[in-house]
Length: 256
Image (cartoon, rainbow, N blue to C red; front, side, top):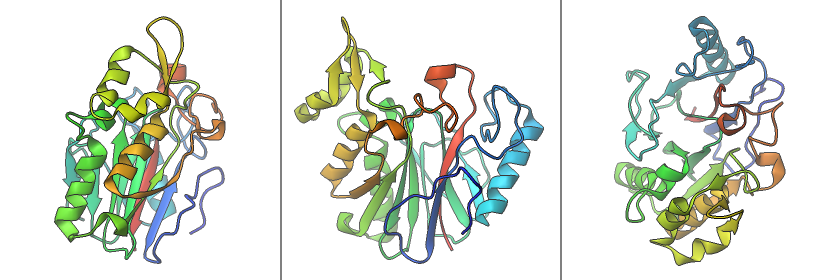
């Protein structure tokens, strides 16, 4: 698959019948401040530009990207070739070839998942609320449970790729965020660094990797270094935290 210049080809050992991609700001039709490949239809961009950008994505990957209505929860949608865009969910799975599980972000963490035998793929939108969830069950636990129920797969058969997100040097949070994670895992303390009175810098990809490790799922991708940070790379990534008015890029995974 030849990707448009500037897009990211995830590096992980996918089975031969699975493909993945992460878009950037590059290659679209939107004007500033959404320039140029904004895929979000809810951020104030011209609808015709968003439609053209989504068509460009579909043509590039030769699959149908299915866009969710993401609400920072942990509901998981099962996608088929007949399902419409706009299902309210923050994760999705599919066994149908040609249907791309698609997660839009502009600081939150996109997580792609695949079974090692290529039977199914999935994707999740992991902001801190969705990742923390309730009682230790957040969006990653929910999407993994859906994969297991749908396919009977074991954790050792599953791998994940973490895409770009707000990095550990930029993600300032209050004590309620730290408390939400520490309530179920005291070992996360090292992933929060003090940053002034009542403030912390949180390692979002580190928190996700810890949740995946607890599930037994092997992870690749975002290691929390500066090159993965949406805030620190304005030429590559949209960032709501940095710009307030911002487009959305997307991570997609699909079966051939």
